Image 1 (cartoon, rainbow, N blue to C red):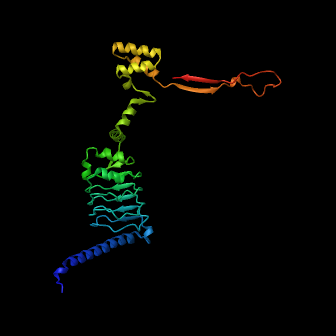
Image 2 (tube, rainbow, N blue to C red):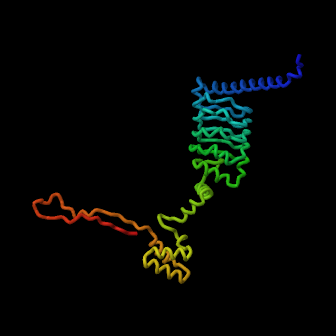
Image 3 (cartoon, rainbow, N blue to C red):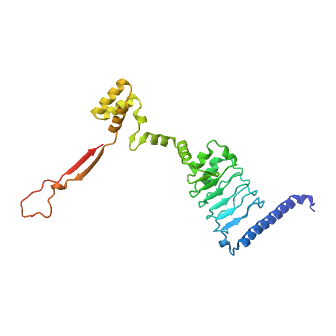
Length: 288
């Protein structure tokens, strides 16, 4: 006959299961208290739940509350978010002050979120966090402060690059200057192109480039343009007046064509008269 000692592992497993069942009963009790307090009759009526400051380490599946829009789980001990599989209507989610270290695969489907609080957790990977959140195009308020990922040198610019819809980040309004800096940081080539162009023509910074570039511009331009360039090359300088003239000659040529209606006979004329119309012509107008 087996001794009691040989059954010790099974006893531990049974004790763990008992604690788990007790915890789930406690969790359900907390939820039922909230439902009763708010006067909800059916699961489909539940639009908000406050489960903050309950010492929760885990949360049972909340998929049955399909119309849930506001959920508070702040100031608990939650380490993973695997209970929101079908809560697609969530607009506000408060997970601040927990023990989250990774949210990969947990929140990306919650594209209706307007407010997301993740501050005061243990999130370390900024890129992984942004990959999880970048599909939330409706997100306006986001808090990530007091996480290790906040120590990234380009933290704020990275967040604004991946989540351009955010207006309030870590309790601070997002400024236009920050958005421009984020764009310049992550799109340096496009920024250089934009800065070198102005309404269809090069700016003065390009006009004051090397003499070789000035010569090539002169060969493509009119005789007057070439004369200005040669004079400028001899003096190794370009005056302000020459810059203005050069820029004028570098503008794109505009051209449009219209029909010359003066060559067409009017219908009110007497057709018995022998009068022949000139051949219809197209008039082309070209200007800079």
